[in-house]
Image (cartoon, rainbow, N blue to C red; front, side):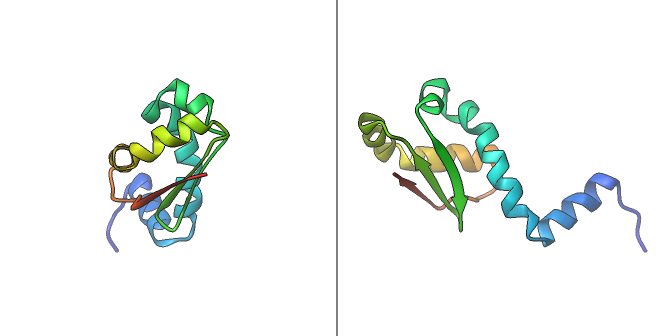
Length: 93
């Protein structure tokens, strides 16, 4: 049996378990302001990841339009923050 650090063992466990999606859901809410800025984060009511799709909820009409134009940039920024190709699509509601 090989030796693993606790961090490596936890990383492997999370990657193989169903906890990964739950952790991503928590992480996206934590990094949203950092990735998108304070103004957008302030007017965003909910962020969630379901099946590689990022759902962004906002009651502000002009922000919805702006986010529609920035979908590819949002995907790029979020994937860069997670250091993996996690998000494939963005839905604004």
